[in-house]
Structures are given as C-alpha cells and as structure tokens.
Length: 310
Image (cartoon, rainbow, N blue to C red; front, side):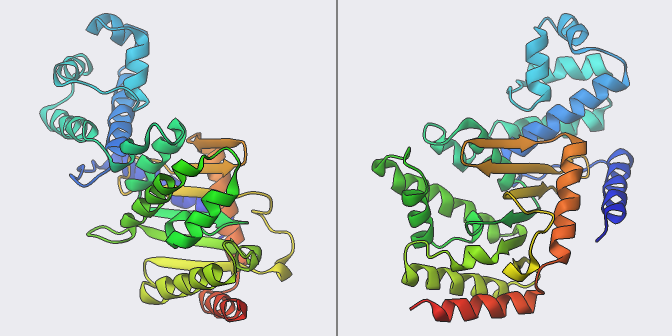
C-alpha cells in the first residue's frame, strides 16, 4: 500500500465520522468510551464556537475540569453531563448516546488492578488496546506481547530491566497474559505484526523456551489466518522504513475515533494522537509490510528457526 492510498483511507474514515453515529457497545473498554465521550463533547463545543473556559463559566466548573473530560481523563457524573447537553443544545438521540458512553466509562477495566504496578501511561495503553479493533505492530527485538507464551514473557520481564523487583515479576506476567484475552471472545482483536528476523533468533529464556514461543506463533497464525497475520522482516531486506524502533498502531471500530500510536523504548513510553504524526506511522507500517516475507514464507522461516533451537 502506497502513501497516497493510506491517506485516502484515513480521509474516508474522517468522512464516515461526520456522516454517521456509532452506537457504543457494552463490551467496549471504559478507557475508550471515556475518550470517545470527551472527543464528542469537544467537537460539539467547537462547532458552536465556545471555549473550554466559557463552558466552565456556564456550568460553574473550572476550565481544567472541562479539558480533563474532553481528554477522557476525568469521570463525568450524570448531572454534569445533563448540564453540558443543555449548554451544547444537543438533541435527545445524541444525549442518549453520550449517556451510554458516560455509563460505560465509569466501569472498572481489568487493567486498573495493576495501576500501582505499571506506569500510568501504560495503564492507559492497556485500556486503549482492550477497546481496539485492529493492532498493527512492528517489533525489532521481542515478540509482540499479545503473542508471547508465559515462559517467554517471564524471561523478557526478568531479563529486560534491572528496575523490576523479583516480587513484581509474577504480577507483570499475569498482566501480560490478561491482555491476550482480546484475541478470543465475541469480538476478537485483529493483529498484524511484523517481526524482525532478529526477534526469532534471540534466544530469550534459552532454546527450549524460544522454540516453544516460535511454535506458538506458527500455531496462532495457522489456526486464525483471518485474524492474526505474522510477517517477518528478513535480515536480507537491509534498511527499511521502520528500521530503528518498535511501534504499534491501534485502530477502533467507531468511525469517530482516530488511530493511535503506542511507542515503548528503554526510557520512553508514549501514546500519540496527533494526526500528522500518526499518519507518518501508518504510512511507515504499510511500506514496511510491503518489504516483508509473505505470510507463508514467514511461517516457513519461523518453523525452520524453531527446529534449529536445540
């Protein structure tokens, strides 16, 4: 897929956003529901030409509260939403949709039980991932967390950083395994991941653990070809568009929600939502995917490397 095609796809999504409403679902992530609620309120405020400060004065609240709600980071009680509905002159149908989102946003996601263990930005990412429809990822050193076996995950967590206490390892592994529930169920997450060949050859946990991990990848891709696509970037490809660092692009079912990018490196984690930056990553992933081995070739290589792990 070329850059112009990707941009056209994103433009089509934007048009769909303005032309129809997306009914929220009860299974959606509370993090994503809070985000959509905030986006819709902000868009309506801007449509009628009000500033956040003006809304705050009209509702008897501070501007920071309005901004927090619009960012999806502040919970909105029912009476406060009713106030905003009147100020924004929203119709009954729109108000009902926003109330459904507000109720969904008050639920507690499974990831909240790890809020004292994991960084706040990573907790937010888990909430976004839990509500995503499709994740596209590039990894240059480790297998995507959604595809890791428990033994591989434990080896990564224990060996990946000196800042993690041994007493935390089990809970961090449990959190990583809990993420994988999105791969099953009524609305399973679609995953397209590109792995550098180096990911396959790095013997994380030793040959036995690595062989089981590689066989797990082959099994997942063979069992769910419509849902999980694993592509390998071979050493022979040389430099490529994603060369230099891992990232993930998260897409959502609601046409109102733009793509997000998650990036995690040694000393930096970030969720990006600025459209220009996100577009760069979407284009980069599409161009990177074009240079990988085919799905069949990728699985053949993964299986061959697994057999070498003795």
